[in-house]
Length: 242
Image (cartoon, rainbow, N blue to C red; front, side):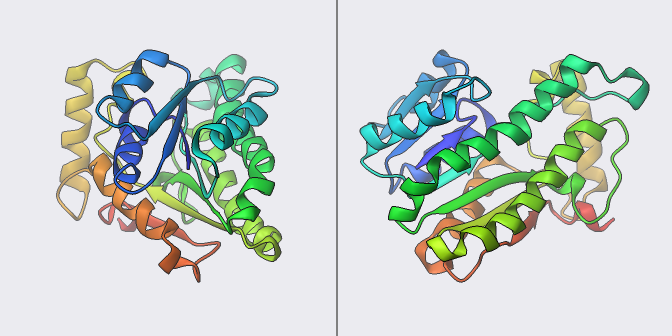
């Protein structure tokens, strides 16, 4: 099993959830946070790599095959965001979001196809409910566009890869207390205020927890879920219904 963006937030929760039953390779740019994820888990392996670099997709797959012996699940979780209205979108920030959120999943999934086909594996793409269902998302146009594209890829790949026995599914996550806001540049106080505001506007009355997303991921990638492919499951406490 491969999990990108496994050093923090949802990626770390995914790694810990799957490590209860699976050998896991977590991939990320920062080796220290990856090792924090792996602390206490003998079956979590780490690979510090930039998934946007040329040749990184093949490196990730080969490392997983060597360390784990097989690849049965690939979770495209890594993402980056640089909020800005259109007039302030900078080329480097837009290119980075496209590279991490969209191009990297394309080429990593491509590199993993043979390994996944050997095990009738599953690809899980982590999307965002903010970009689902024809919604608009002022200030997040580039980030949202990458997530819309990822959901389209989920449906398209599900058809393309079904003959090879590979399922493709996605989770459209709502606001989760993952620390992403701070990593995007907010102060801890601003991030707490943001979460509190979202909680008041969410039918469930709160924001999500990373472990909840990990639970849903495990259900969608379990062998018992093999009849589900092309599905995008929204897990957002009802926020996208408002």
